[in-house]
Amino acid sequence: MELSAREPRPPEPKTDGLAVNCDGLASRNGEPAEITVSLSHPGKRVSPIEGGNLYRLRDRKFLLEDKRRLCAWALGAAMLGILLMIAHAELCPAVYQPGSIYALSINGLISVSTGCLLILIIAFHYKDIRLFIIDHNQVDWRIAMTTNRVLGISLELLVCAIHPVASYLGPDVGVPSPVLTWNSSVPPICLCQSQRQTWMEVELLLSGLMFLRLYLVHRAILLHSKVLLSASYRSIGSLNNINFTFRFVLKVLMNKYPARTLLVFIMFFWLSAAWMLRLCERQEEVTTGDMGTALWLIAITFLTVGYGDVAPQTSCGKVVCLFTGVMGVACTAMLVAVVTKKLALNKGEKHVHFFMMDIQISKEIRNAAANVLRECWLLHRTTQAKNNNGEHRHHQRCLLEAIRVFRHLRLKQRKLRDYTSEMVDLSKMQMIMCDLSANWNNSYRELEQRIISMEQKLDELGQSFQSTSQLLSQALHRRRLDHR
Image 1 (cartoon, rainbow, N blue to C red):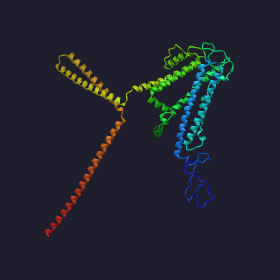
Image 2: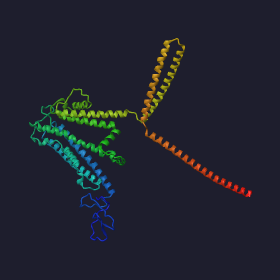
Image 3: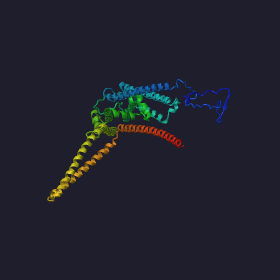
């Protein structure tokens, strides 16, 4: 698309009436020629219909809907692959044997879902690049392929391509293996029985890394959130230079639904971490290989309690527990912040509370002042009596205590008013400023009326002076005529 509204015209064969300026550009009737710079492909011409703003907005809307739909499908494919992997790890070798047709079928389904996920990821980024082209006035698509974008797409494809393939790429594939039970001494990992432990570790690592596909959850939340779908949100955000990222959407969710958001995240994290710990610990056939024990260990590690009754035995299990402890500290901090916000008084409640405290302190100050006056009077009376020194000292101590209480209450009231003065209500300040401006306008109008009335009176005085001077001149003229 061109930067100018008009496309460059081809040169005409005739040059009559054309003038050449100092830059070597031809112009007609001495006017400068129009220069246009194209950001699109040199051989591509854009029609006015494609370059219209209305059509750009329409295409942008359709692309956003396609991105939202592709992201939902990609998340569904990722979850399907994770669920198939979990089912395969739980059913093999309890229900079917490694290397059987059922194992190969489920591994094939996992690979097919992975391939569909990769295709959906590529389609999503294709729509994203097209949206970039529309937003930047039909530039060449190669401009959108920056280094960061290429690295991000490559890393995303690499993460989504991870899935357990050792079941049908390892040695002894297709060789029948003996029936295994849950109490068997052989490690219950769904691999063909061989002497190599490497394939077992590869299978375990790839199964755990499949949970990295859950990064698509934050993208789905962002694209399906009401914040991004609302035109008013986008308009106000663009005016205030706010980027609608997942961080902003997460802040909105934590502000509107803090307890619900934390509860869903904690439950999902507990179940995922417990299953990964169980998968890691099943190699050694320890007590933490059971789902209930693994969930208990994850819960006490997440809550930073650590009773010490159970502990992970494998390196993989220790890494899972370490990550669980770090996430537990972070979630505990967020939970404390949410509870603190819920227990804090709002603006109206603070105003009412501080107002009642101010009234109560004012009453106590009046009582303390009355006690000071009373003790002063009693001390003066005992001083005048001059017969009981013990009573005199008693009233002196009471007077000093009353003065101390009075000063303490005055200081408490000052601190309270200083704190309430910091809570400036913008609406109240606006009302005060409106009242002041209204009073100033009324004063200005009254002043204008007084000035106008003074001008009128000055005009009347001038006219009366003129009439008086005319009467005097007439009287003097008659006086002179009479003397003659």
